[in-house]
Image 1 (spheres, protein in one colour):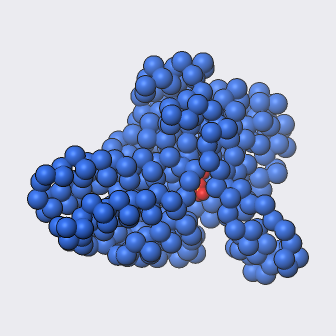
Image 2: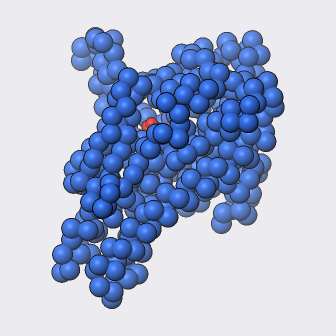
Image 3: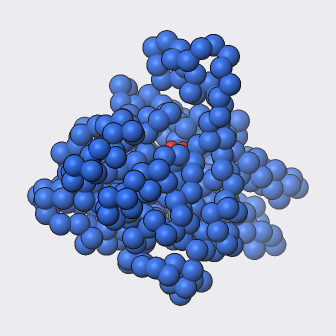
Length: 348
Ligand code: MRU
């Protein structure tokens, strides 16, 4: 399967539902599901059927539109507020979810005097605009990120920051996909990414499909790979970047960055501006999602891998301190430290 054939998020014909590729079924099965009601939409995000910061923002935009189509005139804004708050409450770390839902809500609120069909139509246009803007940003990020790499390099990836997590090229995987398109030799070690294996299940699948030379490793093998000089850069996506450049991403990213610093390997965080949260001063202000311990005890394995009932702590994200980040790659180009000054200059 080529990456063009995979459409992770789309509005159903007629616009009465959102269709997603169920990422929990990958890499074994390519299954699309159609979501019409808000409970199913919430569950899809919670269960990571649709996941990745930009992707859940795009998805939520379409959800707001689909849900708004069923509101009556009198109840329109009350139900809009209720559904927006409900969708936002699903996952806390990626700022894209709340940001895109608020973008939809603000648009509708700004049209309060207009007839409801007109507002709904505008919401549909806005949801599509969010999706198209993300695709354009991803292309620009891929281009800028590729500029930091050299023919023959091998990079380390963590989690999945490819087209599945965004649109088209993705962020962290964008330079690799672009390099493959251009016939360049840039390879990847893929962290499996415990506990939910987004690296093994999704990144390896996307890179293989795109013809990128990739090698799967367990997360705790990255230090050896760097010590042996096998890795020239770490490429990671981001769920929320604070104003000082601290970057929340999948749990394990900060560990990889600390090891990379030790071995002198540059860490590049690739993200669209929709992931930068200048209202969050530092990483300490970013809410970290803590998920069900069952994901560590037994999920994704044929049989439970830990004693029944063992206490688990399952934070889904961590924050990479800005001191560990060599550069931040955005759709407006490469940003270097000091991030507190340079991010604001570009996006303030
Ligand atoms: O829990 P997930 O799978 O949604 O976590 C996703 C990540 O951590 C990604 O790296 C991040 O959202 C960037 S995606 C371009």
